[in-house]
Image (cartoon, rainbow, N blue to C red; front, side, top):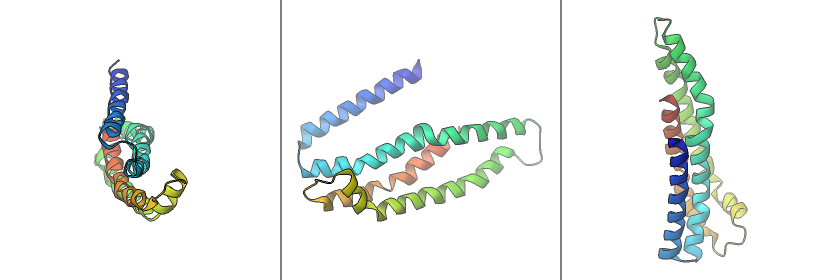
Length: 144
């Protein structure tokens, strides 16, 4: 019930965000550039924070917690974090760097008719860093 309520609240807040953008900034190239640039972080939030990482990491952490009950000399949860977090962090950084490098191509695919794609490319490069922060947030969420 709580999850359903939070999902509805998230959808309503997204609607409020879109209405606020339309009210304060109207329709124009600047707003278009922002919306194109925000497409990738919004997708990353869904994949990394809400679903994707939890799908893979929750079973691994559950197994580590079950092994902890057996009382091995090293804590399996700490060992899992020690082994996986640095690798995942490098993967998130690599993803962000790849998105930054591919920004002109991504903008061309996401918004082929944009009159001035330079602002959208710059905004996409700025928001690409969200891959790192969203990824680490998703990792911590799955670990909890």
